[in-house]
Image (cartoon, rainbow, N blue to C red; front, side, top):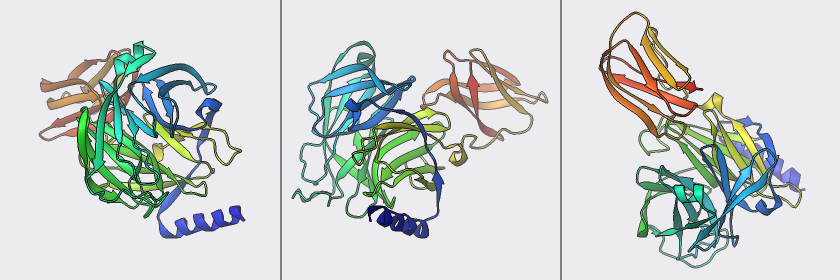
Length: 368
C-alpha cells in the first residue's frame, strides 16, 4: 500500500510541474556511525560531514573510497541540539544548529570555527552566531507543522543565507544573517515554492548556480538547480527541478567538481544504509555563461592559463580567474595585450572571465 501511494504522489508532481528525472551514481555506503549524517562540505578535496539531532559535537572526514571515517575533530564550546548543515568561506567553517522540527526553539545558532584549526588540530574552538527569525511570533510546539525548521545554509561575502524546511506549505523561505559572532535577527528576504522539504544547499559562485536538495515524506528525493540570477536574488533566474529515480532521504550536499555534486543520505526505512551519491548536472549548468568569441583562445598547461587573440587584435579590459568555489585567484586590468600568461599555483577547474568595453566572455578551463 505504501508503494502504491508513492506512485500516486510522484504522478501528481509530474502533472503539476515542469521537471526532469535524474539517476544518481552511488559512490559508497557510509560508516554506520553516520546513519544520521546531515551536512557536507568539500574543503580542498576533503569531504567533511556531521550528524544531527542529539549527535556528538564532532566533524568527520570521510574516505570516499569506502565511506569510512578517517579523522574526527571535536568542536569545543558547542552543543549538538540539531546540527543540520555546514558551509564555509575563505577563513571559517559554519555549522548550523538550527534544526527546529516543532518550531519552538529559542536558541537557534550557527557555530563558527577557523578553517586553519580544522586542518591542523583534532580539537577546535567554536564561536556562536545566535539568531531568531524576523517573522516568527509564536513558539508553541507543533511537531512537523512549522515553517521555521531549517536544514540548509550557504555563505557569501559577510553573510549567511538560510533556506527553511517548510512542513506547512512545502516552500522554502530565505533569511539573511551576519557571519560574525553575536546575537541577531535573521532577516526574511523571499520564498520559493519548491514543493518538497529542503534539507541542504550549495552555491557555486563561479557559475552563479544554487543547488537545493530535498525530499518528501514517502522517500521521493529532489535536486533544484537555480541559475542566471543576479547577486543573491537566488530565485530570479532560471530553474529546474530534478526528480531522483531512487528512493531515499537525502541530507547533505557539496560540490564534487565543476559539473557535479556529492549528496549524502541518512539510513532510511530500516533497510537503506547511509550513502554518498554523485549527480552529474552538466546538462543543467551554465558552465560557459557567455561562450568564447571567435578570435579568442583560452588554453592551459602546467600551472598556467594562456589567453590570446588569434588575429592579433588587442584586449583592453578587466580579467579575473575564479576557482571552483568562487575565490578570485587572479585579477588584472589589461591595457593593450594580445597574449597573456596567468600563473596558477594549484591544479583544478577555473573560470576565466573578461569584461571590456566591446567584448566580454567567460569560459571554463582545467589547469594540471
